[in-house]
Length: 518
Image (tube, rainbow, N blue to C red; front, side, top):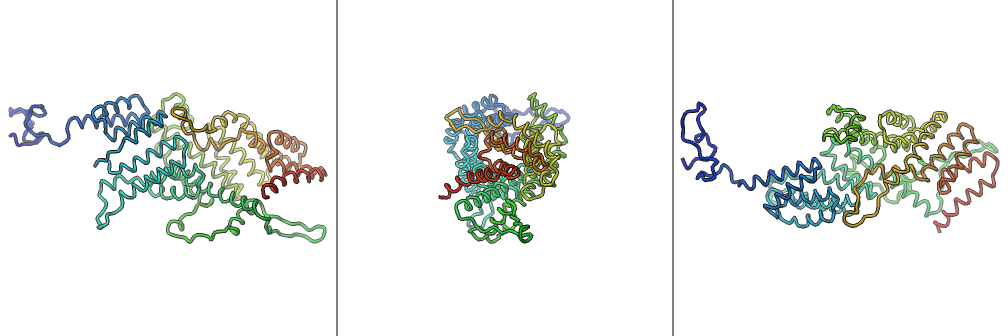
């Protein structure tokens, strides 16, 4: 009887309740060996760790701190406990202490074969919270190398063990690294990371949104490089068309966006790369960015349809009351991703000279309930631009006025979105949404651009008096540095016959460029 295992069928009481030998398991004085090799102390420690993980997921720092402390009291060098404690300190914005705790996690165990990748990933997350995106990208790169070394096949041709394969986190690490590169202004490198992450995260709408934003960033980088090369070199010959003869002869110059696209294609110094297996599938172009953004909207609709949760207004009300569940919080994030993707699609349509599609995206976005002020202001601005391209200036004027009214209310948001310099200890603040940092519609330069746009609308309607008033308002708000306001002023002077005044304005604008070129 002593050789039987505890919990075996022979040692249990019969189902009919007949008298049998009483079982002495789980009596501590039992002579029988336990069913497993795990000690009761290890079971209690594992339960405390799971309680701490659940508390961290519920964002209850006090409960998680208590459970982690209980675990570390039993074993001060528990690697999982130290990782959770560092995570808890990071959530409490004690980043220096979190990095110190991670530095103490120097023990490798069979349960955590991917320990090095987890360490570098957590260090990257902490540096992301401290707004040190270049350093965070470095740590995520180290985590990717450690992850690749763990999941690489052996030299003798043996397959990767299941314990190692189950710890593969390449897609998540690629996404984290791509986000840091995107925040650091490296669009093409960020797109490569997001493209690799989408192989597994293709059902995540946020990953598609970031891939689309990386394409937009890469497009803006190429345009900026073209402008920098144009400013530092001699003016090149511009292709133009000629219409008419004699006194009726006219020269048609290309539009700015098409000229920039032509110069990007024709004046690039480096030859185009040869297509490979990866680059032949996708490239960080604006057209591919539109596909990624459309995929993000499709995944958002699918996620909202599957969840079948509340509407956006009800979710916002619950968030204000603090009664959001985890599923409701995810649904609210999906709503936000969908709206940002819609606005990005409107911008891409304007750049690709498709104002009708841009107007459709803007109208769809403005029809959403509870739209944030910054998204609404951008949507009105893009709708105004699209209507101007469609020669519907009478409909564009209300959008421009609404954008101006919203820009006045955006001053506090813009001031709050400015990232302060990194301090020491608890002086650091959590990272905000990237879109709010870009939505600087409340400052003087952006308001001057909106007034210049409204002046263009009045010019299209032959209302020169209102156009001149808008230009004057734009100049008072910092329009002296805005080319759009300056061009509107030159046009109005030419319409009024003030050729000398218009020439003076153009010459004043050319002087800084000449000085910069010298």
